[in-house]
Length: 241
Length: 241
Image (cartoon, rainbow over all chains, first blue to last red; front, side):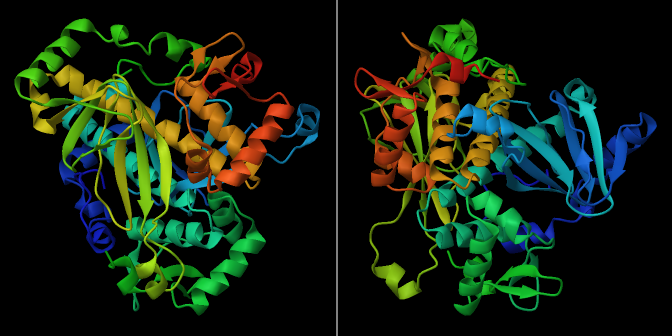
């Protein structure tokens, strides 16, 4: 949703959901870029959980589906020898990039960023920044989208600063559903599944704890699930401001 | 350091420290913007911990000193009545904005963002985005700076996804010092103090736990402090990639 302008509107769950389809993008520029990408072999589909071989210096656009960003920590407070033998690096779920949104990856120690297709038939277009010289207005949209993503990450950091894991969990789910939620029978639902392990990796907790706390939130009526384990917020929570 | 281009270089602690002074900014544009800000009363100094009354829709530039970004959570998993009587909202430290860097605040529930002068004599310039129509190259620099800040926040989220608090603490300090650290006798030091309560608020922990874990990290030689309680990393940690 590159065309979405800052500042973000209140009631964003509803307003964002309504523009989340690809059709909301100004048709001409987007279609021209897709044509250009096809012509130059800069477009590829990925299947669920397939790694997208994103490189620093390139710009990526999600054409269809959703991309999952993941961070891997190389820093640990344990001794170096112990770390060297530890083959399971901690992966953190860093959020989604939806259709029409850009992403980029800047390789950087002591943490590295990776991107995966979160759903089947995720299609990604890539280009160099200078390729955007042909579409200056579109470049502006891309840069504004990164401004927007940056603001969302600040909100995300706000909830991860909360001491109690259950507060971090509810804040995390609220932010995700506020941004990506789609209207459902009761409230708003995240359109993609997310495992409890993935949620735990985002909020500094474990799969087991997330499962337990999700049960608590469900009991209190603060969340519910629908269909294939999609996480939902009741409407009055999303809209309570 | 708006002129800093992505992707971020390795060894950024040293390279960034070397360009962190205001003198590194291309002199002419920056001086013209400062002159314009003075003329139009769009510039103000703040004293330590003074709140900067930033509004959505405006763009802010740190001319001198450092700004501290803070997020306040309005969401809690406790019952609503309990929350209503709870007058101490949780504040999370979200990072610094150094001299030459832009920031903006998009008011947004269920979390709100605030900015404070982190040190005395912090000076901030503000403008509307359309004011940048006069300086298109500078606008590009500002937008690239937000791209850079966004990438840094993704790394920050990577460490906050780590399960053990001591790992989150070390990752957090490493990222801060990598970005803002200045060369010191042994390694790199954060040029500003940060209380243990502020650190705790960033990593989802408490002042007491941070104090205890800082002691552990110090014992293991992973951090040390200098002068007025400035936090430092030994050089080999910052540069270990």
